[in-house]
Length: 343
View 1 (cartoon, rainbow, N blue to C red):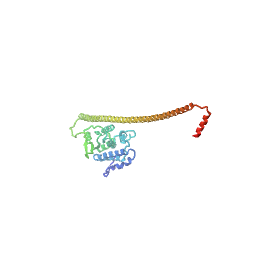
View 2: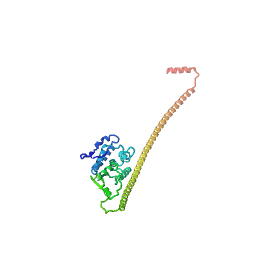
View 3: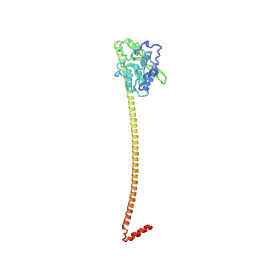
View 4: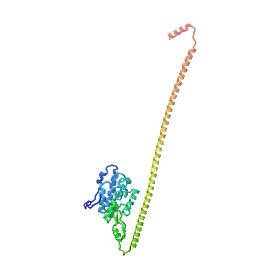
């Protein structure tokens, strides 16, 4: 949405509160959505202390719509980041749109967690667009004396004009002074740092075209060297951060492997103990069964012995009865009968 004076009247205080975005945070990871809102609004309040009124209004209009709140915590899936990197489906948006950059930097560039590598590359692209170095770990709140150039840069559609060919053009170009604002939460103060293309304007004596071209070449060479130094410094910072990320990753992987090994070892010990207890239980049960069988065998043996004794006694009595002599006297039976009756 473009900026016009009619949209930014003096009574417009550009106030945004978290409650205005509650309708954007009811689904998905509500905590992450609200975290984005808090971080972005905090950065916007700091920007209001540094940026121009038209710049503040550009950011205000974009934030108020609420279409920058993402459902994903990964930066590569963030809505604003995908638009800045021209990912599929976002080609229609300007690549260097500053309000989107403010959102991405507030969420991923000003926290205690390591800054993503892709965000550092995005800062490098934005540095080329604005012509100044942008520190990924510090908020970037631009402000230019040339309001038209500032507005074009914020919209992401600015193109550097052709290099000047006269001293008058050089003087006019130096009037546009980029400003980098930074806000320190700890000291509750803000500062404005001006980056000048030239240290001053001095009217020189008339020079011919050859001398002027030589001056222009020297100026371009010094600018190129300064830019190369900035790129080299960014590359060194990037390499250091990558080394730190690699060390942190190795440390985390080591901790993770150690944790899983300890967990596996503990589980193995538990399983071994359970197996030993189960084996001991089964062995005890087998011993009890064997003892019970032995007792049954003893009782059976005892009964068998008693049966043998009874059989022997019966056999002996039968044998004794068989060996008793039989009398031939018929009176013996009679006398026996009498004895029985008398008894």
